Amino acid sequence: MRHAALVALLLVTACQAPPPPAPEFTDADRQAVADEVSQASQDWMAAWARNDIDATMATLVDDPEAYFVGDPGVWVNNLSFTPTVEEVRAGWETLKETRSASRMFPSQESIAVLSPDHAVQVWVGEWNVTDAEGVTTPNARMTATFVWVRQGAEWRMLHWTQHWTRTPVEG
Image (cartoon, rainbow, N blue to C red; front, side, top):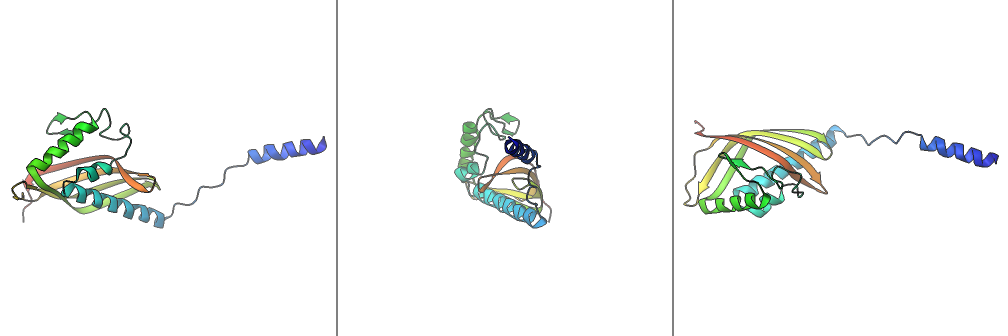
């Protein structure tokens, strides 16, 4: 009986012990995440530039209930509202008829690493579009904000917003 009481006391004590500390998230870890997010962003911009809608959509979080173009979705452009992922894809597909490339050129980038699996990226830069006839617009100012989450081994875009002007950059 004494042994049973002692074993029970040890089990209760062990169950009340604090959990082991979480592994430290170092500055080097944060930099590695920032580098991965920056690369994911560059890959997304390259897909967008070559009008690769499949690759562009694949960068988004794969849970349609979770991200900015979920069902119901939100894609607001020129005061129009696109309510579903399928309609967003269809709208982006029509861009291929009017443009051969859309390019973004970030000149300033900031990445806030919130955790090993979450980061916010902000960049300022320029953009231009080359139409179907090969005519490229002058560069104009653009800013963008992205929320990135790690899904498995990949970084996916949970949300993005961008703001641009059509006023050409001087000089």
